[in-house]
Figure 1 (tube, rainbow, N blue to C red):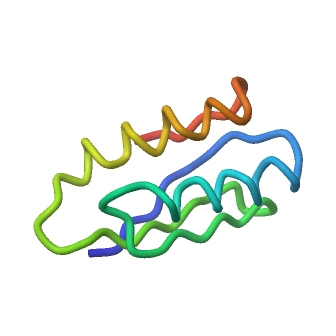
Figure 2 (figure 1 turned 135 degrees about the vertical axis):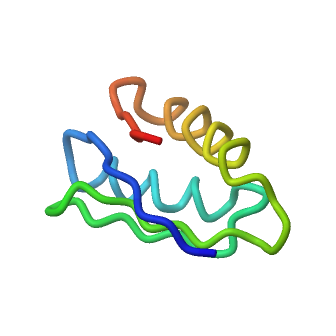
Figure 3 (figure 1 turned 120 degrees about the horizontal axis):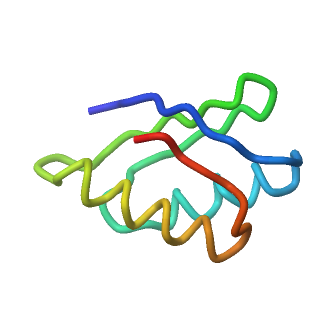
Length: 72
């Protein structure tokens, strides 16, 4: 399943790091961050709870940029 989320991030470098972190999160098959559109598209593994996975993604992203936000 693929879903799109609105994000708030200040710089393109932070957006790229958010993408990397999201891709490494368990339960995520792929993630793409578009800094210009302020969107993150996430493809989830089969059978995972997307809300739980996105909470992990959010926590992991805040480790690299405490000001970033993912609107779930």
